[in-house]
Length: 420
Image (cartoon, rainbow, N blue to C red; front, side, top):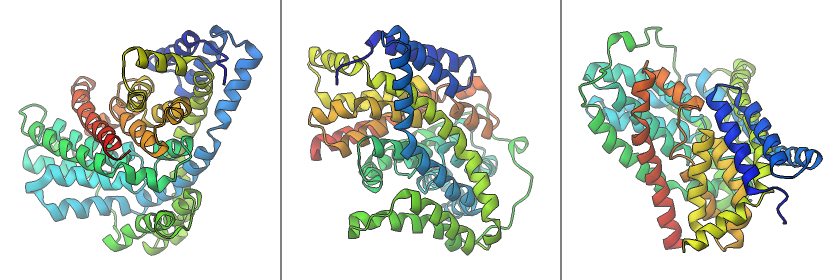
């Protein structure tokens, strides 16, 4: 398709959106305004710009519907105490001597079963802080264990970023999740290695003042807590195993309803759904804004110019996939927004270059976890707040987080080179 907007216009629109987000303006509005300005500067005219923005936002609707229904599972896991029980069981099983490993694995699993990464960290944080205080661990090491574990789980999860990437490349959600299994394990290993070194640091130890003394709720049994997520995994696995397709639109809320029933909270399903909706509505609105600027970027000459630049540098076309994920996630400070923009913009280019859709989706998805936690995004502040960490201390963790994300990205790229 012939470009309707210039590369300069598209990039300026993205830069304007980033600057406004950094200035604490509502991100969805920033992206919409950036798309409008980018389209006008890019020479598309007002009518064509608005139509392209609307078209871009419309392309997000299938992902948004699945994300909205996923809130039932996430809300139920949190409100019934199932997520906390799963995390607590893992930590108790591995013990304090393996605290870092336990914390990282617990966060990975909570995120992998469908809880958003920031909520996963917040869920595990009270347990991690209690262990950290007893073992005299540093906040940085404990938080890195949770964030790194969350990043590993995020590329395995039926979360918004995975849904958006699978939609853009027309790939089965389960296949995209499983494609990044090895990269996720690699990211987990690096997380444990780095966090194990940081927890021994002498700065910012966890104290009793950091602990949540609100008391424990009555938690379900581990089997009851795990029933919902296991049911979702089983339903999503029916397509590759038996050729039976059950869409995430059905599987995710069904798992949430089952979780509520087996944990004895059937009467609370409405409350759980409302809570879950409150957690996904923000990212759903963000994706509408993301869709507008993705539409402008996709209709610009950026794809052709980036491809030409890679050719001039004698770099293979597949490098575009991880690079796009890294840059777009860094620009938006969001795994979901970054992965979505990158996938929507460059899916056609990558497929035309002969890169298999599943591999391209995996590389973009992994790349979107490298620098997705910059200060102009909510994840940076939500995770820092979960352990009462100052902004200056939180900033020091960014290079370590990037190393975790880069590990999974390199692993995904190597897997593509080996297996295609």
